[in-house]
Image 1 (cartoon, helix red, strand yellow):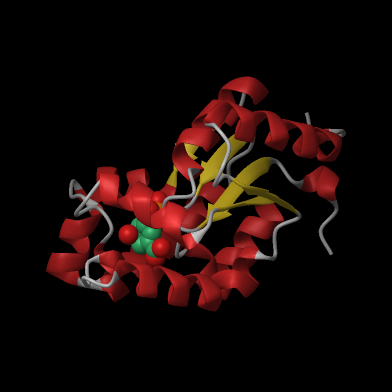
Image 2 (cartoon, rainbow, N blue to C red):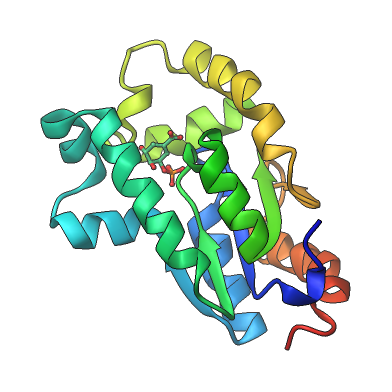
Length: 180
Ligand code: S3P
């Protein structure tokens, strides 16, 4: 069992469209932490967008890059780390991140997720099968046990970004004593 005082980061887990990047970025500002996003790191390193990577090299290649990046970011401190929605399905990723930081999960109802991902069409290769709601519901239930490893969870379905950040801060702050 890892002592919380050794945990240096805030790690945001959650399904696509739950607001990990935008909420994580604002949370970092509030905490005066740095912000980093695993998908963005993969894109910077490959000079390709995530859908292009899936398309040209396949999901397995993407997942191996993702695992590499997770190891790297786990070594950081005082970062809010926003993770791609599939990161925790790899047990090694989840172990590494759990050692590295306080795990926080953002959730949202499937219909809300669908609405949000539809605003940015073509960006989520796993939901490109023309039956997104069914896929979202299936993936959510498969991933629930992994997302549930976090100690803090916020449902972002019906609240604004600022309110999600406020609620997260309130829940995270007691765990930060002894870290900063
Ligand atoms: C994925 C989520 C995406 C991205 C990739 C795979 C997933 O990130 O990593 O498309 O498996 O859920 P976001 O959760 O930031 O959309």
